Length: 478
Picture (tube, rainbow, N blue to C red):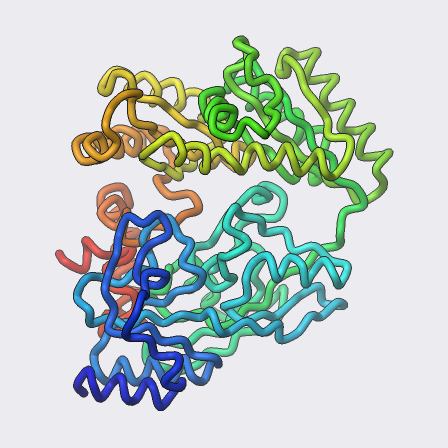
């Protein structure tokens, strides 16, 4: 089938208005960070699962590869076409239906194009909580969240997207539809196909709908911003919080002093507590949710902070007195990436290490980077509660950003990822592999694991048409 014939088939399948080939397609062909700009044969926007299946069948018959795409907010270049002009970008953005909310089963079934914030608001209006929360929640989609197994700020209590999902609807690389939207919490009938597709970044099939867990709304939610004397103290505070708040601990974020100084510099309208406290190299943002009452939650929270002061884990702390104040404190944390972008070009890392080993990792990695690249500035922040750091590297002050990235990015990545491997961690905690880190997977993943991954890919997608170049890129070229 020629490209012209394929495009005619696609227009007949989804409507000519939803097969985009001309005009400004950068919203679909450029990655979120504007690092890569590809060229597609067409951007196709099906409106139903049956249309997705028909599009996949047509592309398979033509031997044309497909790049599945949700909100296109990923940070690992996992939903961007290459430069060939021969790939079809399959956007799920039109598939935005909330199919069912089952209050008795505590589940909601939604299509892949539903915006995360829309799902949060839908759950809230029904009196429930959907806890997945990300900086991009106003534009990222549930399909993309599941495709990358998104994390966010409440993983230590509720888990990643994987733990929040009970079932999937998937279009296979052959254009068949697998309906696994059971909503069952127990189903021990063979291989867990759901978990194959979650985190596969569109390389094994296309998620078109999902059944997600809902939770009761907490009766109270308290937030504190604490200055700590070291990363070791932050980890000790985490241990105390687990001990005294148990499942009530829903958020535990760490922020380095330099990261917070960028917020102070570029967003002076935000009031950053303890920004000038020289003896506090880190601050911690912690959140406690309670199912009983605000009085009960506040008593436990204040008791925790008193113990932390006594044990030297905390130098000073402020507790939000209202939801508005809590929002302001969280806004400081969420503004770090924006402030870093204002400061200039940088090298981002999304790493995970056992929380107990993070202080030693930070000390080691800081020293190695300062030794090998004098003047480098480290923007260290992230989800300490689940061991996930955004250990970013800012260009030395006064140096040209583009030149630094051209000359030093590979070295920086090698130094950081080697240190992560030395401490038994992962180079990708929640952003996925995509095309950006496919070469790292081949280097840092065990040969046995890679062999099994290749076997799964070959079994499900023997033509290699589903998001080629992502995840297993280097191995496919071998």
